[in-house]
Length: 142
Image (cartoon, rainbow, N blue to C red):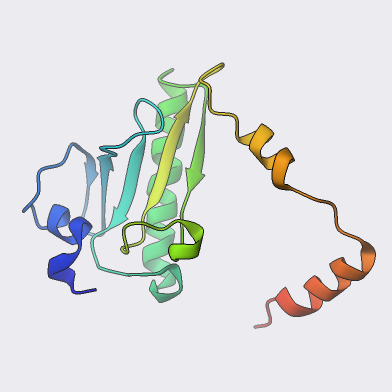
């Protein structure tokens, strides 16, 4: 994707209006125009990275730190009782804008968003052999 075609690059450049909650030299935070809950926000690096594996550690660290700070602010001010953080990476994982971004989703008691129910419906236990196989395939080596 060309940067000129990226909606988030255009928002960063000021070509498309947005409701900005935070703006520094590396990251912006905007309200999501299609929120899951009131106050749903997006933490977006200013540099274009299509996928998570393309972003450098410093930039991703900044995205995570700003998301942590926003989440804490939302809870500490009483705006919400908790948050979910979410990042979709690749189309298979439902990434719809191909410029990485972290969702900060405010949560309130009885808000109708039931991630735990969904998780229980699709999760399954692992046998010891499968745990061993997955550990062998997925262990990170430096």
